[in-house]
Length: 402
Image (cartoon, rainbow, N blue to C red; front, top):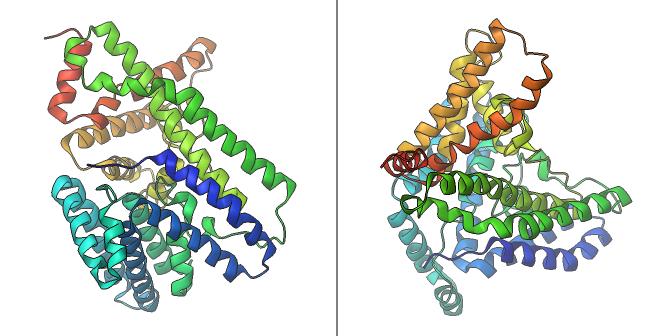
């Protein structure tokens, strides 16, 4: 049975932070501070399942080896090929998981538990007592690792020790639910003691996350059932439930992002915002600049810019490729392909319209943009939640067509 409670992880994280933070700020050595955070991340993964900890230790060792190779070959002719090979190897795990989810998850658990046989028997026994789990956080970890390798190839990150890479990989606040943070983001500031501003920011972000998850999102959690019972609901009920689900989807994810960013602030790490009221954006481009911003920034850095998105004659190809990477990061399915095409059409359409007509100064039009944008995004959510055939049935049910 698949089982993982995101909030339980954050509860353990905040409890661990209460113990580790005083030690973190007492010691002066940055290496010791990173070690403390790595140990906290280790304990948190162990509490989910020893096999998950074992996997991530191996994963980040492999990433460190790749980092060494990419750094050594960056300045010669093999640099581009080496980087490409490492990215393909990392993405292959994500692709296999998305295309064959059930066998991948089953083998992920069984093979890792067998691999624990090299450790004392008690470890394997503890692992067997834990529920079957998905490879929690793998999609975030793979994109963080790819970003690390690309920046290494570009000379933006110098050769790092295994300890530095393991610290980044085990950094506890972003282990299970992101954000997709850059290497530089997760480095603690060289401060002797936490400032009042930092403590205040951490407290407010954690409170914000708790309010979003428990006060605002929790009462809406049942709206996910709209995707299971749409065939027996009226069009009005489907529209109403989908409207509420859209808010649940945003508030819940945003709340956990606030918890992660707030927990990082406790340790002097300034993660960037991941959400900034995206449903109040005035158009598709502004929406994606305010929704899951760490993923958008990753795609802009590593897809949009390299494809020449800042050039007029390349922008549409770059926009299309960027949004498809964002879409397929969630899953590889026909529904997600259509999701990507849908949002690509919105982004490209907005650029084409702006090229022939400046934005309207009409007050009524300005006020109408946010509700229209929300509706545009809301209508794409069934493609995220359902297989394409089921999503088409869902849209028919929304229109009252049997």
